[in-house]
Length: 348
Picture (spheres, rainbow, N blue to C red):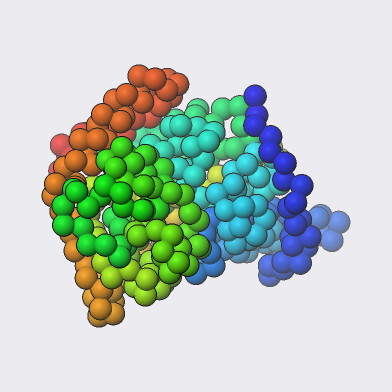
C-alpha cells in the first residue's frame, strides 16, 4: 500500500512563476506537456546545477513539446522528500540520493554512498548493464516511481569527513557528533559516533553553531563550492565509507506512461548524457579542489587505518544481518552488487 503523506502546503504557484525558454510548438493547439522536477540540494550544489541543466536540455531537445521546470531542493517539498512528491505526481521527476528514502525502501541505502559500495565506473556499469536499474525498479514496486539505465551518476568518492576534531585513532569516533546519512550513518553509530540527519544546505550553519563536530556530504569539488573550508579545519579522505556517491533521476510512472515514445527517448538520452557529464566534471574538479582546500589552510588527511578497518568489519556484519532480516530484494541487490564488484576487479 502506498504511503500517502500530506503535501497540501506545496506551493504549486511557483511552477507558474518559473519560466524556461523553449520553442513554441508548431501548432498552437498542441499544448506542451509540463513537468515539474526538483533536485535535493541548495542552488550552489553541482548536482542541483546539473539537474537544472538537464531540465532545460530536455525542454530544448523536445522543441518545447515537453517543458521541464526545474526547482531547487526544498522549494516544493521539504528536502529529501522529493520521491514522496513524485509518488503523488506532484513532481514528475526528481534527482536525489536513493539513501534519502530509507523510510520507504531499506534496500535504497545499498545503491548509495555506503561502505563497500561499487566505485565510479563499476557502479554506473552495474546500474546500466548489470541489472541495477531493474533491481531498483523491483524495489520500488507499488509506488508511482521508476528509473531507467543511464539515470545514475556515480560521482567520485565522498569526503569521509569535514571535521573540527582531529581523528588520530578509532577512539576519536566514539561520541563524535557527526552528520552522516544512510547506511554509513547507521554503521558509524554502531561504532560509537553520535550521528544525525541534517540537510546539506544547513551544514555550514550547524558547524558554526556547534550542533555537530563533523559531517560527510559530497565530493571535494561540491564541498569547496559550499565554502566548507571555512567551518572545518580537517578534511579526511578515504574510499572506505563512500567509494561513490550515487544520485539518480526518478520519474513518475503515470507521467512517463503518458509520454509519446519519441519524448521518452529524448528524456532518456538527455538524462544519460547529463549524468555522465556530471560525473566526469566532478572527478576533474575534485582533483583541483583538494589543492584549493590546502591553499585555504585546511589539513587534508587520510583516515587512520584502524578507523577504516573497523568500519569495513562493522559494515560486513551490518549487511550480513540485513540480508537475513530484510525483504528478499535487499539480499538480491546486495549480492548482485557484490558479485559484480568481484567480477569487475577480476577483469583488470
